[in-house]
Image (tube, rainbow, N blue to C red; front, side, top):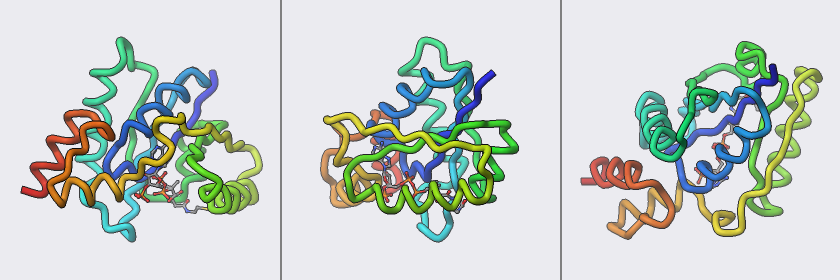
Length: 162
Ligand code: COA
C-alpha cells in the first residue's frame, strides 16, 4: 500500500491547499496531511484548530475522505513521514520563486532519508498566487476572502479577528 504525506503549516487551509490535497489523494492509497506546528511562523490558529478546519472542509468537499488522515507533527518532516510509513512527500509549487526553497528542502530531506521521495505538483492556474499570509491580512483588514478559502475557514478567520 502506498502512503504519501502532504506537509504544511495550513494557517489556515486555502483553496490552493484543498486543490492540491484532492489531486494528491489520487497518487497514493493513503494520504496523510501533516500539519506542522511551525511555532516560529507564529501561527494564528493552533495545530488543533488547523486540523479541525481541514477535517471539516474535507468532509464537505469529498464524498469519501476515509483514505485521508490529518495529523499534527512537531518533529522533523522526514521522521514524521517515516513514522507514518510514507514513501512519498508531496509538495506544491506555485511559482518559480517557490522552487529554490523547495529544492533545498527536498535535497536536505533526501540526504536525511534517501528512501523517501519528494513529488511536486504544480498549483492550478486559478490558485497559484494564493498564500495563507495574504488571506490572513485580507481578513484582518475586513476584506472578503470568499474566493480564497472555504466558508468554514472564512468564518473561523472572522471569529479570530473580531
Ligand atoms: N496553494 C496555496 N498556497 C500554498 C500552496 C498551495 N498549493 N502551497 C503552499 N502554499 C502557501 C502557504 O499558504 C504558505 O503561505 P504563507 O507562507 O503565506 O503562510 C506558503 O505557501 C508556504 O507554506 P507551507 O506549504 O505550509 O510550507 P511551510 O514553509 O510553512 O512549511 C514544512 C513547510 C512544514 C514542510 C516545513 O516547515 C517542515 O518540514 N517542517 C518540519 C521541520 C523540518 O523537517 N525541517 C527541516 C526541513 S529540511
